Length: 216
Image (cartoon, rainbow, N blue to C red; front, side, top):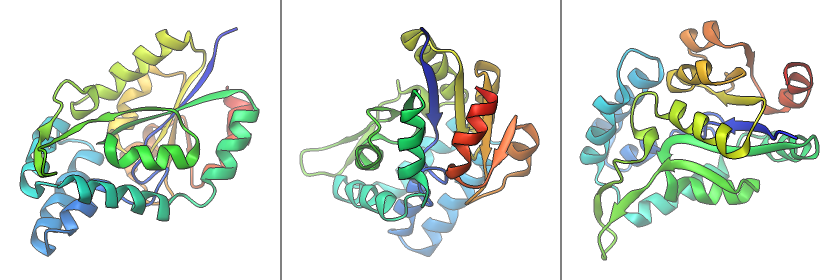
């Protein structure tokens, strides 16, 4: 029997924050504003992910300790219905994974908190003193349509049917052609392009068990 695969974006979906923006905030209001604008441009669609990904990180130069602090912030601002909703979805037989353009070392604590084993995100590199040393450019989600690559890979790996993704951004909407259903998420940010293109649009993860019973 094929697996039922449910993929989640992380930032502004499983948690209220955008991790890269919070890292930018640590560098003062000017850097925060610049980073936030680049994130929004990519998430709203129209700006390729490649054009902002390295630029934001070069501007911030995050340390390993700062990345770990963002991991705790993800947990502190977890979507309020996430824990119970994911428990219900697992009981209903769903296999759950995170697919994110965020940073693996920050997302992993949230994934552990939510009981999610599989995380497909971007690995950052650090020197022995914890200072920033770049990122793994082979990680698909650092690029435009990278989430599509991951969705296809996971479909094949799990022999999954259906494959459904929940997310708030343009990079999530892009995956629609490689999914059975795309569910747009609007608790933290309602992006008009995403809402218009979604097969279903929800405002709380607690809506998922009922939605998936109808759309799976």
